[in-house]
Length: 291
Image 1 (cartoon, rainbow, N blue to C red):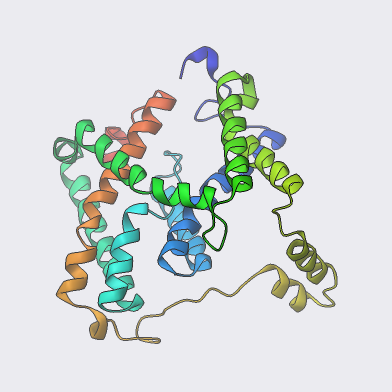
Image 2: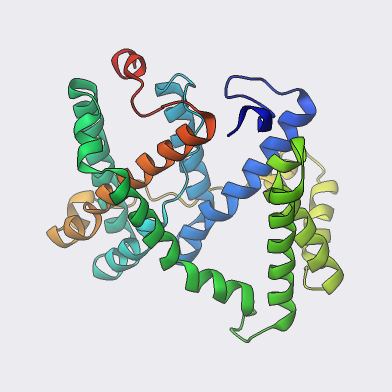
């Protein structure tokens, strides 16, 4: 980013109003992507949100807050989780995901001992870019279907109009707005799209009113928290299932290779962050040695 275009640098602390607005944009921007994976794989969105939050907090602690990144659901896992669930069970897919995490840990130890150059030689930008493009383009049919069709799968001119209006607002804000408004195009697009959807009559206001009524009519702290929070549907190893009963070579073969894809994704994220902020988060040798 050009110095003249910067609104906030990487180490700047925004004032309360900017902090709140930027936080809301990041919340809404990542919320959709994070719950889309469990939605498409028929898993629990609440579990995805909690694990995503815990993963992000752990990442920020490990990197000592030096790298501004959020860890959400990777789209690369959609097909493997669906296939693994069909082959074994959801529990088997989760054990496979755990094994992917073990691969991450091994790669992290290798980076700690040998640096990061070997990984960058294995996954140069010319490899990272196409992999991320393929993942995004692979989801294009899903995005188009969700934008064009209603819940019953019927084509809706109203829904495609709302989608195009949302996209148009976001593009205009990103290209033509100045200063602080230029860095919150996603939030402006979401708000504008929601207002268009509200006037178009496709927002279920009765459900919103029902939730608000349940919240305001809570007669105790317990009822209030029950209205605000939902208990996640965790699958706990050795409590709900035995990992040894659901693991198989098929699960390993389906899930573990995805580690290479998601590592490539993460490197791509760091490359983009480095480009945008003008800092090299990947080859910061001081960080690699001290972390």
